[in-house]
Amino acid sequence: MTRDIAIRLRGVTKRWGNHQVINTMDLDIERGQLVALLGPSGCGKSTTLRLIAGLETADTGSVEINCRDVTGAAPSERSLSMVFQSYALFPHLSVAENISFGMKVRRVPSREREQRLRQALAMTNLEEVAKRKPSELSGGQRQRVALARAIVSGHSICLMDEPLSNLDAKLRHSMRQEIRSLQQRLGMTVVYVTHDQTEAMGMADKIVLMNASCIAQIGTPAALYEHPVSAFTATFIGSPPMMLFSAEHVPPSLRPETEDRRAAGDYLVGIRPEKFCISEPNSCAMRGTVTGLEFQGAESFIYVTLHGGNPVIIRTADQRNLQIGQEIGLSWKHASAHLFDTTSGHRLHAASQASTRNAFPPTANIG
Image (tube, rainbow, N blue to C red):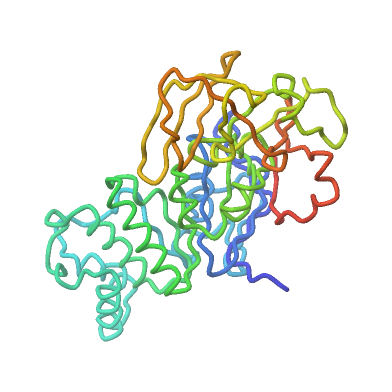
């Protein structure tokens, strides 16, 4: 089936002096999806957004929006709206005036302008505060004004650069749901920059995970969590992250062999925190000491130091009345283990998975 591409980047690079900010990026964003650009600080995600917006110019490559080459076009010519961390509201204008300002500049007819305004106020629950100034609003309300302004623009593409980073945790959670609901109701294509994997995992249809100016992996949140193509993805996605051990330090009974039968010192074994099995220390090949217990309601985090010094975090719904200082045994099923090359960090296939490796959902690994 042919994909409907709203945004396409081909061979895009960007340098600031001697620093490579974006390294030969190829990226397709499908129409109607919310795509999160996720990664550590300095990875290039905000620069990628600015290149799409036209706020930065690519050194090489092309940017297409709605099948039109806009590589050299001004931001105003790219048929998209933007929502930023700072909200960018005029303090002397009311909520309604802030929302309508862009339409006035574009000389949208007054009747249409009023209709769009009423619809946007209703969709963002701002009807009761339409006459207030930004200083009279809460952080969540100011963010809704910025969203309403994007809605009335009439553009089908919206770029968001860490729009929730100024809000507290509870408000961020509710605003995530509001943004996602609006995006789905309007069928908008949203490119959403964040360093918060909770936002990306909870909202996005697809995640573009970036690292060191390159795309590390593209896929659904589930694909990145369950089938990481590198040790970087494995340890970046998930909280707590995947635990990695050098295979030579893992007992043979818990160590899957790689498809190419490489030496244990040449690969890593990765286990998600929820995949550990806890038992008595004499019935398991790996032993450790409980150093911390963190109750989280429906689940608990158990902090363990293995014999040999490696720290491990276990996520479990059953704390089993464990005590600090208690000796426990740890194991896992071979099917739960992820294998990675020690040097490159690339994913390796276990010998037992060779016949099923093509069953994994497709993801991209670039750079």
